[in-house]
Amino acid sequence: MIQRVKLLLCIGIAAFGVSVMGGVTAAELPHYSDTQHLGVASCASSVCHGSVTSRTSTAVRQNEYVIWSRQDRHRISYNTLLNNESKAIAKKLGLKSAHTADICLDCHADNVATHLRGSRFQIDDGVGCEACHGGAENYISSHVDADTPRGEVLQAGLYPTDEPRARAKLCLSCHLGVGDKMATHDIMGAGHPRISFELDTFGALQPAHYVLDKDYKDNKWAGSSVELWSIGQVEAARQTLLLIRDRLNTKGLFPELALFDCHSCHHSMSDRKWVANDRSSLPPGSVRLNDANFVMLLAISSVVSQDLERSLKKGLRALHQTVEKGNNPKKKITSLLTKLDSLDDKLDKADLNSVVPKLRKAIVKRAAAGKLNDYVGAEQATMAVDMLLSVEGKRAKHAKSLENLYKSVNDEDNFEPYKFAKAMKKLAG
Image (cartoon, rainbow, N blue to C red; front, side, top):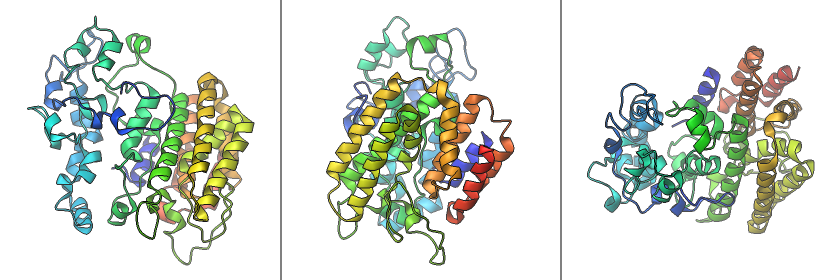
């Protein structure tokens, strides 16, 4: 777990009706809901979610607010906008300030419309309760009533964060982008860290403010890490495709470069370690789309359906080449979205927990063979292998090899693909 924290630090950590398949629309997310957000203070009472200690006499711990306020990094997300780095970014972008600009607040706070802010709402609370759970105007009373069916509470506006696809879409709306909310190349050019995300790992690093007890499992989704990871990978790939479709060519001479692999451009001119990438088959000097969210899907599909793996790889390669030639990629994206729906359907029916060793070996074999020679693929593979070894109960046994693996991806600016492949070979052995 410590190594997972180190990796995330080095790579730049900063609703009801959600469809199972298909992308996120703004209206589905708490940030854009039309219900009033009452503010974190409305949840902070000791008889609500503000108890200093966890309680066992109720269905929830009742100390959720305390955990969030003391341990959760989302609590300080607004404060990040007040530091010198954010001030410098805002100045370069021509903004009056980071802590008043919507393009910053949309992800660093619960930036709902002014008329939807209750009397106790404070924007400087950061990413608070309602930013993830939805405006509490209509469920503030019913969600603590044990006699109120969960469906009614969801209908009243509580966002189903337990449901993995809904959770993935919610997290990805900031940690990847959705609609007009995205860390663009302009923003990153001004100094914002590169965006990277993996649902299970990032979730594991957050302090849990719930308990997976019988009550939780009876009423909510409570699958395994490997199931959450696989669903997260599908949703991330789907949202990546939708961003490419909607945001690739929206301005001027250049496309939206944030959709491409940063390291295909940003490296020293003396860096001559380029090798072919079988996911794109593009020549040296090409600016490749960031397909990190497809890397693990190829490993997953190789276990679930090899025909689907070949089809996904073919479709991904076609997308890369279409964008490289400057052609309209919408047909290729539509085809890939259909393939993702097929994979999603197969994952629903598959027992991934029974094939965890196969999944791990598929990733390790591919990486050890030098086929994950780009940083974005390597970091996804590292997080996945760590998680899978943990599920197998073998993490301690391979602690030294994992440590070497994390060292090989510790610095994205000096990433050596051969060292990464060598570290994976040790795990394979």
